[in-house]
Amino acid sequence: AQKITQTQPGMFVQEKEAVTLDCTYDTSDPSYGLFWYKQPSSGEMIFLIYQGSYDQQNATEGRYSLNFQKARKSANLVISASQLGDSAMYFCAMRDKIKDRDDKIIFGKGTRLHILP
Amino acid sequence: ETGVTQSPTHLIKTRGQQVTLRCSSQSGHNTVSWYQQALGQGPQFIFQYYREEENGRGNFPPRFSGLQFPNYSSELNVNALELDDSALYLCASSLAGFSGATGELFFGEGSRLTVL
Image (cartoon, rainbow over all chains, first blue to last red; front, side, top):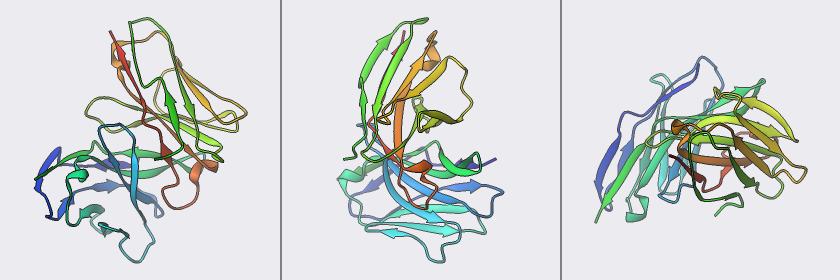
């Protein structure tokens, strides 16, 4: 069964520094997709970045990049030049199949990121 | 800001009561999924509706039920509420179960349920 592990319950980072949020995963499927979501205090899950298992390059979206190490089954999120507005919960997630289609997401427990001024 | 709206945003119930949560999906999306997020945890998949039928279900008892309407909006019903049902309930909409590649799954801000 698919599993996502986030081992950092909380992190404190100085504004403008880069931060790496750890994520490891487990799956027996050769084809899979990995996501990172941001959840501010409002509760909404905001999609940040996606990495497909067959993608040749690490995904990047603005200040977000995904450090994908397939052999180690890790998919760490890197946020460059952190901002106060980056303070939130961050979830690593993976697609999981329903009825032979990729139709739901399983989430890790999350990492709470605090950006300090 | 996504087009997924949920109501109510907050509510308080007592054990044994029943609750109905509502979700309006993003325009053009025909699939709605519901997730339960307990405090300090990641969201857990409850079930998904596609074209008004349940398309898949997570590890939740039958007292969690749902509906999807012709306009693709959806309801989550929970009967015989228990204290452990206290959580943030998130609705997410997508197109055709997002069998595509990227994050075409859009979440609402959730309904926070407290069971006393």
